[in-house]
Image 1 (cartoon, rainbow, N blue to C red):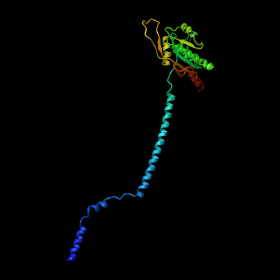
Image 2: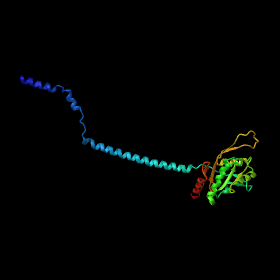
Image 3: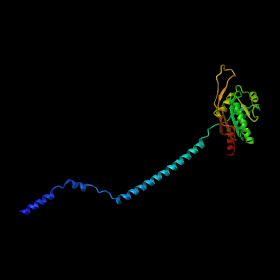
Length: 241
């Protein structure tokens, strides 16, 4: 009877549920060892490093490519589209001339008017200095009138006596002068006058010297702020290129 009771007691103990702390001990995942963790971490690091180097290289290559493209665009499109055919009259010879009349030589072109009080004379004196600096390499200087109403051939001949004899003074009909100015995008506007028939007025206009090549194509331009020696140096560069 005692043995029977003992066996029943053992079976009850064996069938009884285990404590909660025992279940948690078996449920907890074992921590990975260094041996498990090491190879995976270093491999991932190596892959990440290689990818980073690849991206950096690609960035530099792409940056260089874009810079080269920008330089090509600047070379191709950086020069404004100026110039074109024109027909005027040379005040010295009283004969018609065109842009083609000066093909084969460099031309330094300026637009102004003989009654300009200060700016035009100053620019023409600068042109004279450029001619002296360049000597035999000097371009042909042309002065195109923006004031055909008052700048007659006689007026331009008289005006030209105050400057270097190599400067050619050109004028034409209002339409011809306007077409020549438009070809080089020259701005001009007659100032306010009390009487439309009055000859007492000034003209506001662009103050630019244009360098034209022997083929008749625009090469460069120089603003009022550009000194004569810088203009001469730039013309030498164009001749040497």
